[in-house]
Every structure is written in C-alpha cells, then in structure tokens.
Length: 118
Image (cartoon, rainbow, N blue to C red; front, side):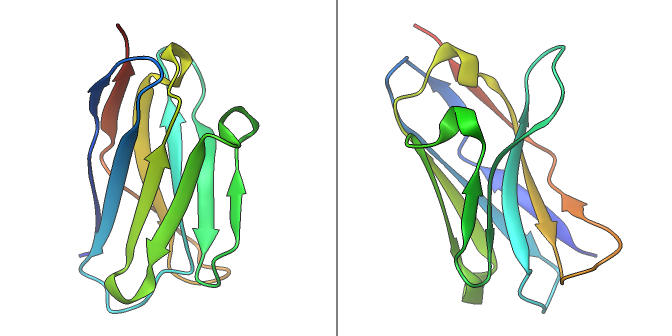
C-alpha cells in the first residue's frame, strides 16, 4: 500500500523558516511528480509547489521567491524549504504525488500543520 508521509510542520514566527519533508512509502516506482498543496481554514486547497523527476518545478504565485521545492529521486522524497514566512502561509500542507504521466489517481499525505504567528 502506497503512503505519503509528511514531517516538519510546526509553529514559526513571521519571517522565519521551516522545512517540510515527504517520503513515499510502499512503492518501487519513482513518482513522476511530487508536490505540495495547502489549505487554510475556509479556503480552497491551492498549489504551493510541484516538481517532476527531471527537476522542473512550478510554484504558486504567493510563494515564488520564498519557497523552494527539491526532491531526491532515489529515495522518492520531496522537500519544501520555506523562508520569509508570513501569517497568511498558515495552513495544513499536503504532500501529493503522481506515479507516472497519465496515472488515473493521485496520492495524498495526511497533512502537516504550519502555523506562522508571533
């Protein structure tokens, strides 16, 4: 059974940094894309960043220049380094993965809470 397991969330002050990690467990396939989405209370889930096996990354507009996504293909792991955090970055962050191009289903982690507050 494939699972995406996130870690690294927590409480951080405005202007601070935080690093999230997500490991794909139970799969022998290197996932084609791995990414991060977030959902704040009473808001829709939105893309934070996504990266493919070739290293091409895309970011949501609100995080460009502050967040960086990276991955370790051999370990099927993705990271999100977040800098200059703002209170509006507060949300539950979800790891998402697609096994291969055209796969019918995506996999999601359980989510990790990130709270930016003084």
